[in-house]
Amino acid sequence: MGLTVTTVGLEKKANQLELKKHAATIHCSNALSLLQRKISNALLYHSYKELLTKEEHEITIKQLCNLISYSGNNHAAIKDALKGLISTVIEWNVVNDTTGAEDWTASSIIASVSLQGPLCYFAYSPRMKQLLHSPSMFGKINLYIQSRFKSSYGLALYENCIRYRGLPYTKWFDMQTFRKLMGVPSDNYVIFRDFKRRVLDKSIEEVNTYSDLLVDVEFTREKRQVTKIRFALKERPKKNRLGLLSEEVSDEEKISDLREKLIRQFGLSPRQVENILTQYDEKFIAEKITVVEASKNYQSGKIKNCAAYLRSALKNDYQHPKPSTDALKLKKYEENQMHYNLKELKRIAEEIEESYMTYREKTIDEAINVLNPTEYEEFMQSFQQYASTSIKTILKLQRKKYSATTILKSPQIKGLLRQFALQKLTVLNNTLVTLEKHLETFSESYRNAWYQLKLFESHDLKRRSVGL
Image (cartoon, rainbow, N blue to C red):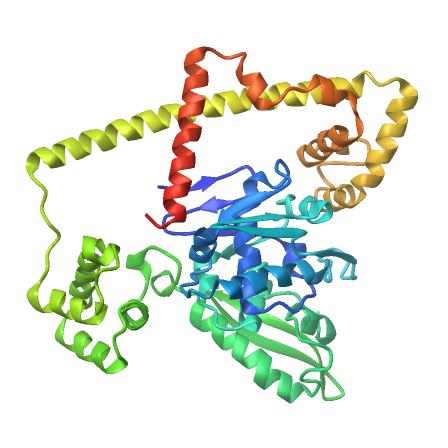
């Protein structure tokens, strides 16, 4: 698959799901549960590409559970966590890396959420979107690694350390600020000894066990009281990292994952698991698991005793059914043909979407430029107030690139200006046509390709939503 860097700062590697999360939302004051923290990262990863172009985003419950590696059937817990994200107010920029001071902004994590059958619809507040969309300062969060954490404190420490990856240390945090970053209520673990034992030691242990970093803590004391804290950072050797290609994961971790799967998915007891690992090689066990999972009886739910079925597969060396040579050739031809057709449909769709975006931007820019001088000045003053937070952020983070007089050249500010114009300039309601209307300017073959792709995507979403 290689390495792909998208325009919004998402990075995809083989077998990896990485989210570039803005530093302000990592260095934030909030008391999220572990499930809430994982869900908030997964939703941001899923919606990042269309953060500014869509008012509302959608994801299937199954997709969300897959992103956070949630294998339970208690969807009520997911619902409660989503409700919590709406009601939880977070404080941003508790830590300002430039000045060391505290800059305060607050917002709910998500503005709204709706569960409709297998689909989850969610939206962010405008202020949240403005900050999240700037990729200038970020920390990479690996969603596979985050899924392994067992406590909110452990994941919070990982997020606050990952921001400084590549440096030997994090910055020094005063203890009051660090407690906020970890989401520890002010009246909990007031005595440092209790805080260290219940929060700090356990979170360090989790980071060192489950993540791709190794951290160690250092303190500054004044009059025998711990006043500041920082962390020494080291990269875990690649052969021991989690969340990477399977051959880069240690043998011990592979066996641990295999044990967990045998217990949770197939219902084997710990003693049965140890007997199986003694009798068979782990590669042989993994191979028989794929044979069982691929069988029609297993997929249709007809297997009543999965543990017994797997033990029989191991004992009798079950194999995947071998299709005939003609069937294999036909399947390969059909797969190649479908891949080619789908690739061509996507190319045409991208061409149409790029054409529409060019038309849309040109139409909005023209509507702004034809304003008379008085209207233009009033419009721009209103926009400066609307986008003041984003403008300040970009001027601070990209001060070498932009100034107050050139800030409108920033792609982020241009995008916000056009979004603002859509809200304020009523003339655009009559002049700006929809994508569907713009589609009529293309040839019939292009229009057919567009509708074929949308039909395929609709069917594919339904298929995945029911787990086919």
